[in-house]
Image (cartoon, rainbow, N blue to C red; front, side, top):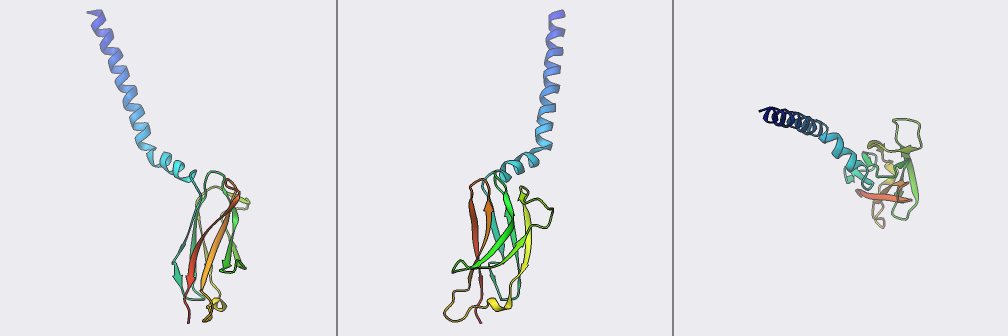
Length: 141
């Protein structure tokens, strides 16, 4: 009889601990998966992908494992840097949290007939020690 009560109390204690662990994981699941995503590879996205010269673009940066430089370069298709913008959320050169930067393109960037209108947005990834880039297009006149 004593053995049965002891077995039941151990089972009860084990059940409570298991429920606590399940609840802990369940309530923190979003934080745990966001951390795993954040520390994957760096991604950069520009929206909209097609704009008219003089319109705003939104640059979304999700830093990878090694973080990124706060400065974002905007280049034309000949790799000439046309502008820079930066993360405005602090003064650190290295940024490890996802962020979005907004930039108003120049009206002078409207492509001529012999130009493609393709521009690149680049950010330096410290983990890979290289620039990560994506493109957007400025519509011709």
